[in-house]
Image (cartoon, rainbow, N blue to C red; front, top):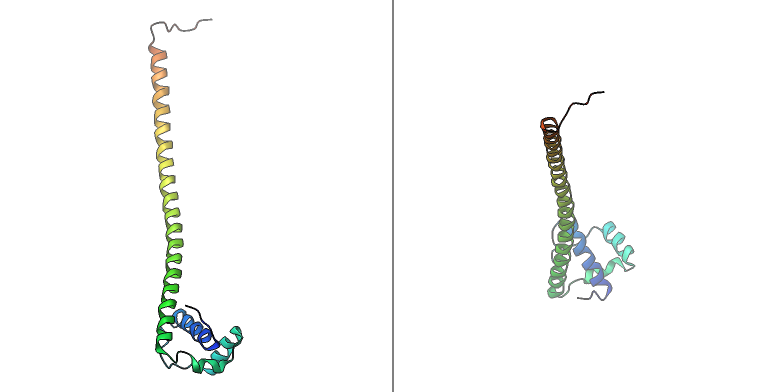
Length: 133
């Protein structure tokens, strides 16, 4: 959906701003404080008076509402994906470190067993003759 015209650009911007804070939809016929309206209009390079003409057709406001909700959902999903990736990375690292510690412990146990086996073999071998000088 395109936001042609100053009124629609300004109205859609307020729709997005309202989703961000206070976290709700811009209601039909809702007015804005003059200072806030002037500030946002200046950012868009449109006259603040254009807001009076926003959504003369309720279908326009509803269409913008649906579009803003979709955009918000995409942003929320992207943030959730990043958080999940970070959590999985932390969890994966923790599991990997645990596996490395277990592997290290198993290797040390095998090494000790190998050394003990070698010593036992060497000390009890029938050809093992004590060295005499």
